[in-house]
Structure formats: structure tokens, C-alpha cells
Amino acid sequence: MRVTIDRNLCNHSFSECARCFARFVSNPRGKDYLCIAEYVEDGDPVLRLTLRCGAEEEVFDLMPEE
Figure 1 (cartoon, rainbow, N blue to C red):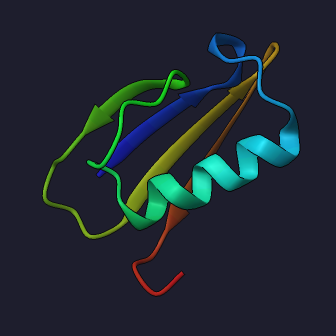
Figure 2 (figure 1 turned 90 degrees about the horizontal axis):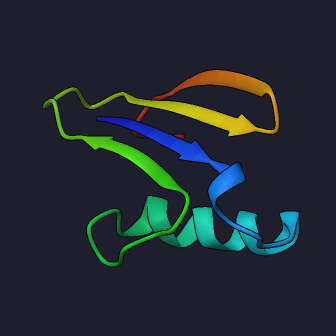
Figure 3 (figure 1 turned 90 degrees about the vertical axis):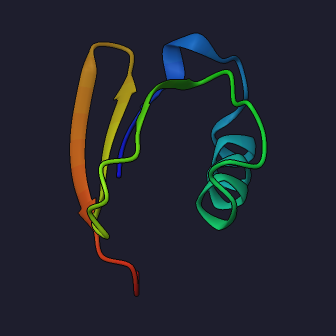
């Protein structure tokens, strides 16, 4: 799965963002999130997470056990 979270699209505080992200990871199809710029279910068990905040962008690969 590939997900891009763009914090520039949402005005939540970082603590609320962390809680929101935890809900998303637990149930990615359960709700529309303002900050989700891209969601691609590609069948890969690894979650490739791209996180944008301001002008910065980081990419993380998260294994299912993580």
C-alpha cells in the first residue's frame, strides 16, 4: 500500500495528527481524512508512507508488524 499524507492540507496540531494517523493505520478504509493526498492499494504488505509537512517530505517503509 502507498499512502501520501500532506500536513499542508489539514490544520490539526501535531498531537491530533498522531492520533489521527493511529486511527488511519488501524482502519485505513474507515474514514475520509483531509490530509490523505494519495492512497493506492497495490497488494504490497509493506506500507510506503510519504509524509509532507511544509516544504519537507519524508518517505518511510513500514512492515506489517510495525
